[in-house]
Image (cartoon, rainbow, N blue to C red; front, side, top):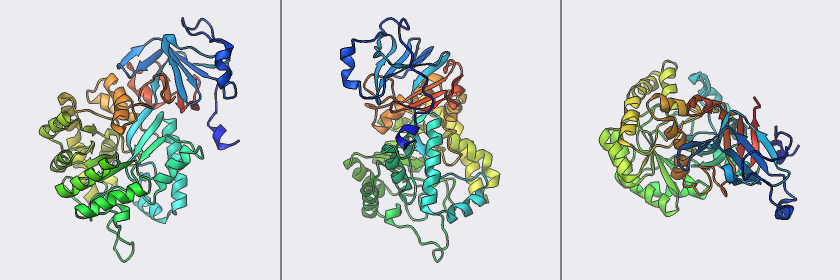
Amino acid sequence: MSPLRSIFRTVLPGAVLGGLFPGLIAPPASAQTADSAGPPAIVLRAARLFDATTGRMRTDGVIVVQGERIVGVGRDAVAPAGSQVIDLGDATLLPGFIDVHTHLTSEYDPQYYRGVYDNLMRTQAEQALYAARWARRTLEAGFTTVRNLGGTYHVDIGLRNAINKYVTEGPRILTAAYSLGSTGGHCDQTPWPPERVEPAGLLQGVCNGPEACRQAVREQMKYGADVIKICASGGVLSEADPVDVPQLTPEELRAIVSEAHTWKRKVAAHSHGDVAARLAIEAGVDSIEHGSFLTEDTLRLMKSRGVYLVPTRCAVEWVGKQADTYPPQIAEKARAAHAAHEAMFKAALRIGVPIALGTDAGVFPHGQNGREFGLMVDLGMSPHAALLAGTRDAARLLGIEAEAGTLESGKLADVVAVRGDVLANIRSTEQPVLVMWHGRIAVHRPN
Ligand SMILES: [Zn+2]
């Protein structure tokens, strides 16, 4: 079976439409001639449809898909004769989920020390094969688009391109190539003794001074970065730096942001620290990732400037639980970030900071991205708002709202179905019963 066709796995046999909903009737045969050579249209039916254009639940759960596009939604949808009908029964149809913070080309081993050894021994080709598996798991979890914020050896670029050419299956990827940061910072490599492992340079995203940082941005874009990721502050899973201090100067931040924005690339700033986040926001970044120690003043500044918070609750929770297994200097940082993050998230909700769903998948095992919805709801976010953060609002942050994020005619047919009423049970997002990517059925788990 060719790779192109292998994604079609469990499409149910076609069924004849009629009387499903008023208006859902076949047009005259002459209207279909243009499509007669392609695969039949697919009609998805379910008891409910989450409308991310309004944030409301609808009961006319119908989506008509032709090729890779949605051609009709709800009561007024018209399905061509001969369409395949997939009736999902007591389920909710949703836009394909979007995770704006993943690391699809790596995954920490739950045994940290073993993971360090295994990673060091892996060839790039081997790493790419793992990445393909992790991309597939992510798609199977209902995530049809991800923003990938940092990877090595351009495995992320290769993975994105291979998925776009249907060589392998995974979500649509907007990727950053190497993350950018200063020497010794969170985005620099582990401080292996330099006699053993060659230190990273501009090509690998390590830059000092505004002009070097500008060049580092250009290096990433040259090799295909869709977005620029920077380390504005220290991080948890790095050996040599405090978690919260600024790691880029205002001049370096301005150089990075101006260069990226000139090329119409957004800038995602990793920042646990408050001062670092403030400097990054003032320089014009588009999102703050993690945000553990942000103060209310900084959160208000984000709201006024329309800067998104990407909370990565999944990763914060994971490193808090795993802290005892990390080297002591990392464990201490993991506990501190975990302890501070919950209050920050609640303050962000209260203030009304725009939030996009991002998990930092790779810090924890890939394919568990859907847990982020429930973790945000646990801290007081409404299920409606959590779903919008992982669909419409994430698409806006990525600048792909014309193509994805809502279920509307003309958009890409990226669709997820979950059991029952998703607003009553947000954790149904953790195991979708159907995942459609660009009009192709990637997963169908019949009841
Ligand atoms: Zn990350």
